[in-house]
Image (tube, rainbow over all chains, first blue to last red; front, side, top):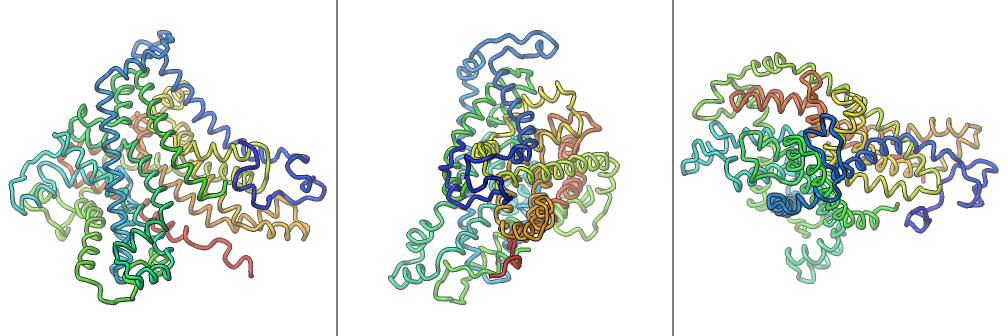
Length: 322
Length: 290
């Protein structure tokens, strides 16, 4: 990993210039220990609070660790039994399927709405454009917990604004409980997640769209390309790396969604039919005191996330120089 | 704060520079404003409404006969201790993250050494470990160190998901500052440390502010770890306090819950709007003349 074949190696080396410190002899010359000293505090924190707990997580997942072990019983090594247990549990598979579908739907909606908003912003006059951008910033800046509780209030069964509005528009929605049905629960959760995710995507895409060279667009228009064709054949290829990175990031974020689901469940929603992986692991470990199976679920989650990350990192490596 | 983005003329729309902005476009723009701004307004509006109004047949859209009772109730409900805990944890996290990340960023962008690329890869990969999956074992580990329900314990946890991002961004900032500036100072007889302190550090100030604010927002908003690690009533941070309030109210005190929510959101919104403009500013603009 420490070879100089990384893209960044092409850049002139920014070593501290000091007479006679062997800089000109390159990497193989005398080395100073200073950079290691500078890195030490960060590495120490990452090792202690991330590396070690990660090992503990894996160790927990291959041991027997329930309520008895919390009170001092030895935690016996049980090999892959916990993994066998979760993989043989239909509940786990339905949670997995739900997580994947929820993630896919949310990412798709976030990206499509974000792109539409970004395209729209470019067509607006100055006043409306600033208004839209400000509204997006407001929603973006809201703490996730505040946003979730806010939407919980808007979808409140008795006094929520949504039920009132839908009743006004026709139909009787008084006292409709959104959180007691799996599908309407997940719909509300989707609205919260997409509402919170769109501003970042729209802002970034808008920034990308402003970079599309004007002359190429003009040339395409002169050649008779319509708006849709210009978008598909000029704009999209130009901002493709951006779209890929945003999609990858959204996948990573929506895959591990916790706060929105947890809060809505606590608001009187159903749990069994609405769990996603993160909440399920938490509920198994902290709620049901099965730290062993909870840890196994968490390990599965980490593995899936790291696999997804590979895609993201490949894009990053292309964009940034390491 | 939005001007830096708004000022640039977009180029992909109607290329011919048509002024005729269709009614449909305007309408769509207004709809987007409504969808994203209205819920935030609704939170603030609710926080000023009387309970009787909130439980009425029709919602009131403007707090004309509003009240501050909801805010008063928030303060009676242990808001201040939670605020104090949140500030303690957040400020400590920001300071620690900036100091550690600055050192690491300098190491990575000013030196070439064995393991440099490996460290950068670690920083990137670490960002991707889902914190939600770490809750279980981190609770066990911190419990073993007797750091559950302490600010230090929570700060350590927050560092692992603030630090990699901060290092990553500061690295960009440091390498954006030309080394020639420091070299010039060295020629003038400055020590290396002094050269860094007087030349590079001031130029990095905007970067430090921006990443500091981002770290602040992260730590201020964090919910899951605070929920699990700060499980005693007197060690709650604001999000945990707010959720406890929300669950305790059981849908009967929306005015109070929204008042608490508003109070928690205000610092973040202010910081956020502030940093949006800062991030786009050119860093060394003016430092080097062509």
